[in-house]
Each structure stands twice: as structure tokens, then as C-alpha cells.
Image: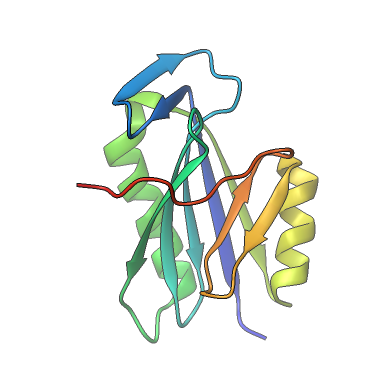
Length: 135
């Protein structure tokens, strides 16, 4: 099987895209997440106040997962470095089930996957989904 990554950056803020609001000391932290495989790269930004999700699909096929994982980490540090709280890098060589177990072990919550191929982590007891459109 191919190598896949899920990189979850927890931020030290919770925010709302639609309300244009950001505050410290979150109940749930906002995140920047990267799902990376040889045929798909997703950048997922979550907004904790509204449980909102924004997804960017990055064109690259075939992708080198190791190379793109490094790029994702440096890009996130560049754009979110002042509010980064922690980074969790998960990888799997045996597919989604292994990645899901690793995510739940490391972070709790759940790994979400929909029919359109969107994969991202969210805290337990939440209902994260796309609720606003980036401008």
C-alpha cells in the first residue's frame, strides 16, 4: 500500500469565519490539517466556534507524500506560526483504518471521511462540516 499522511496543526485560538471573530483560550482549537496521499492533497481549515470546515484541494498527481508533507509543514508554519500550539504528524502504510486508529489514539475525537473523499479530524461530540464559503 501507499504511504498516507494526516498532519494536524492545533492552533491556540478558536474562531468563526462567518462572524469574523477570533479569541484565545478555546474550548476546541481551530486547526489546519493536511491529508496527503500519492493521488490527493487536501488542506483543511477548521473554525471551532461554528464547527465550520474549509477545504482546498491541491492539484498534484502523482504526488510524493514525503515531499508534500515537508512542504505542508513549512507552509503552515509560515502562515500560522504566530498561533501554532502543536503539530501531530500521523502516517500510515496500510490505509485509512490504520490512519484512523492513529488519529483517535493521538487526538481522541474522530476521523471524518465523506463520499467526496474529504478526510479530516474533529473533536468528539462535534458536527464539523462546511457552513461558509471563503471569499
